[in-house]
Image 1 (tube, rainbow, N blue to C red):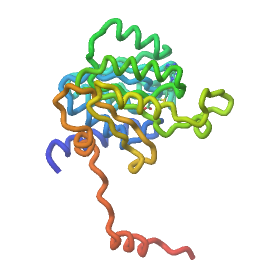
Image 2 (spheres, rainbow, N blue to C red; image 1 turned 120 degrees about the vertical axis):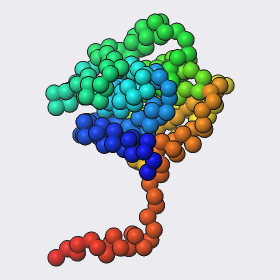
Image 3 (cartoon, rainbow, N blue to C red; image 1 turned 180 degrees about the horizontal axis):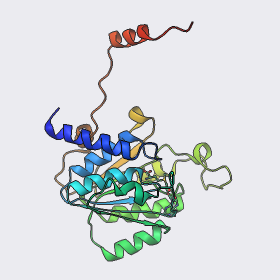
Image 4 (cartoon, rainbow, N blue to C red; image 1 turned 45 degrees about the horizontal axis):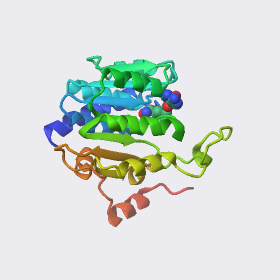
Length: 251
Ligand SMILES: C[S@@+](CC[C@H](N)C(=O)[O-])C[C@H]1O[C@@H](n2cnc3c(N)ncnc32)[C@H](O)[C@@H]1O
């Protein structure tokens, strides 16, 4: 392991401890987000929405190390064991580079943020929000417009389908379609897209979409992700048999 990878592993283990049990984003995805942000100089990161601050802690830790900043928000001031996202993130972000706004609708929040900074400035945006096409479509296309050349838009929930995962009391316009997948497919076809890919199904049983804007000098997405989230080594048949033999037999 290189000295840098060892340093990352130490930081990630600390972040895992700080956010242990906090919903929602899976740790391997948080690790990937951390490493992608760590690869950017003075990263400017946006997260919509942050819930209890699980992914935010990793984004903020990476941005702090690279002298960048994170803007995150949520409609609700969620609490996990009495800690809001701000408290979850505080220990991960010694520099205070992460600003979290709670109790605000993402559409208004984004309009305010982008009115302040109207250029293409976002290095990485993580969109994990409302589970309705009506809101998420606005958020995805608005974020995309302000991603800088070579920057990344990451969307969670490609596999989220209202009839299976939604609230039974809510009426959805297309209950059998994943609107996030439809948005991802739409974004992937835009003229200013360098490349797009899905990741996560093999690793954590759920899919995220990655879209990179044209015009940057970064490595390919596949290379960036392979470097940031190396595949787990496959176990040989001999290892599997050994593990099965060593399992205790029921009495
Ligand atoms: C799956 S959670 C986000 C998880 C978070 N990114 C993480 O890593 O743990 C989705 C969040 O979207 C928020 N949300 C729903 N509608 C919203 C809206 N209109 N504006 C802002 N946030 C919204 C919910 O309160 C919820 O916390």
